[in-house]
Structures are given as C-alpha cells and as structure tokens.
Image (cartoon, rainbow, N blue to C red; front, top):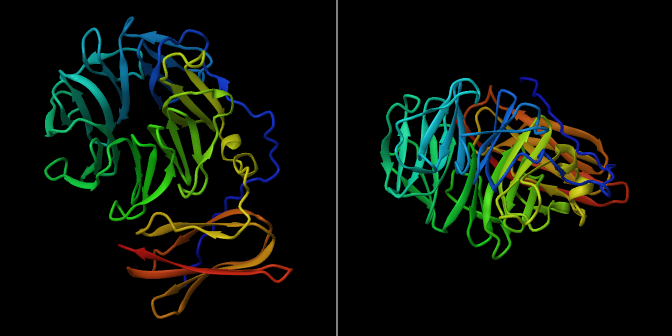
Length: 399
C-alpha cells in the first residue's frame, strides 16, 4: 500500500495576546470608505468611495488613480490582468495589463457592482441594468448570463451569485440552480465547501456543494458583508466587526479588538498578514488595517472559551479527489489513533498512532491509489487519567 503523506499543522498554545492589536496600513493618503482589496504580483489595491489606491510596499504607502470620486467598488484579477469596476465619472470596468500603472476601459457599459474571475473568464454584475455578464476575451465583449443582480464568487467552473438567494451555475449561465433561499450579500467557496453570508447575520456552511446546510455563525442584525477562506481558516467581515474560524467554519470567534464598530467590507491575506478594509462611513480613523496571520489564528488568542472536549472535524473537501484533510482538537495530552476504513470495515490506513499533547492538529490523506467510494475515518484517544474518546465520520472519494 502506498505510504500516505502526513501533513500536520500544530497551532501554538503559547502566544501571549494581551498586546495584540490591528495596526494601520494607511499612510493618510487613503480616502473614503474602502470596499474592495486585491493583491497581484506583490502590489496591493484598495478601492472604494474615492480613488482606487495602489501600494507596492505592503500598505506602508499608497498612491491614488482615476481621479477624485471615482467610486472604485470592486476588483478582480485574471491571467496577467487586473480589473476594476468604476462608477464615476465614467462608469464601467477598467483593465490594467501592467499591474496598475496604466488603465483602459473595457466594453462593459454599465455601473459595476461585483466582479469575480476564473482562469479564462470574468463575470460582473451591473446596477441599473440588473444582469450578470461574462467575458472570455479579457473584456472586449460581454454577454448577459442572468437577469439577477448580486455578489459574485468563482470557484473552478462554478459561478456563485448571492442575491435574494444563493444561485450557482457550472455551465457559464446556461442553467442556474438555487441552492439557498435566504437573501445574501457574500459568498466564498472552495471546491465542495461553501460559506454563504446573509443580511440577517448568519453564515451558512455546506460541505457538499450546497446540497445541505448548517448554520456556522448567527449574530442577528449583523450583515455579513465579506467572507474569505484561507486553507482551514475562514474570515468574516460584518457591520459589527471581524470574526475568524480556525476549524473550517465550525465556529467563529470575534477578533475585532481595537477596530471599534467597523463595517468590514473586504478581507485579504497576503505575505502572512491579514488585511481588512472599512466601509463604515468614518466610524474609525483609517480605512485599511493589517495584522499578522499568526496572531489572528492563534488558538490561545482566539479561543477565550477554550475547547474542553475532543472535537473531530468533517474532512474537507468532501467529496474529494484524490486527497483530503482531517483535523481534530485535543483538550488534553493523550494516546491517539486515526485510522481509515472501507465500507466492509477493513482498515485501509493508519494516519496517527502516537501520544499527542493538547492542541489542534490536521493531517492530509492521499487516496490516489484507491477506487472511488465511501470510506470512514475513526479517531480514538485514551488519556493517562482514563478518559476515552471515539468518533467515526464518513467521507466520499469521487474520481
């Protein structure tokens, strides 16, 4: 049997969070409310109710483009190009082929609301003429693919549209399927895992392409304006602050700290920093903040009510091909085993068989040599004081 690759991520429990704070990534040149963040080839972009701003030194200094009151609402990147949606004075979508040094208007003639990009296409929503448009020729021509305006996200060949519900197409708009009925304003997806943010303060989570859902976050009255996924970490921006999940969306912790009552409209992870942007009409003095990623995802820092029981997470992605990740939390040091079985109960692989201190862990299972089908993984733990834990979960290999 193939030797299975193990990838462990051990989150430190020794981080001292007392002095951890967000710091300004704004040299006072940024103006207005920032609605969008993007990074391309080491250059940061921040767009909002004033200029489109650009920084080539990780946010230490910024320069503005497009003139005053440009309303640079949305940003995307595809191939070697950067795209920006401008609402004033000449509405449309602009393209830069040299990383923001020069810009040219594409043929998109509507007021842009949302942009998202795949490897070979760009999709955009237009206000005033509520359609979703797609281009496959870098903006030379645009074709309508939906009559619904909303917020876009692209994952592979799937286009998600959050509006009066959550809709998805996998054939470039020939067919749309509604996979959730709540009114939504943000969405992020990673293969089979989807997070859907709503106007009623909820984040819904699906691990099977939207076939079923669970509520991962619920804060009534807090619009979920932005969602961002980075590996197992999920970040959420609301009009009551910033939240983080270190367990792939199973639970969220507030990480607002010194941001005040910020309305977080955009999130970006770049060069081991988390950047957030305020779109809250002056509630705090600066528009872009940053903070080390390690501070944000530290278990000790983010877990004020530290987990006091074992937790075996659902593997992700699921279904998977050919590898998947399994994570778990141990509240105490114990001897732990993690094994994989087929539907007949035959042991396929032993991923863990050793003593583990208290902490959060992750392992990658590679099933490249196995056929498609249903498999099970079981974690068992036995501590020195006699406490035991055992749990089994199902996963699907789909080739």
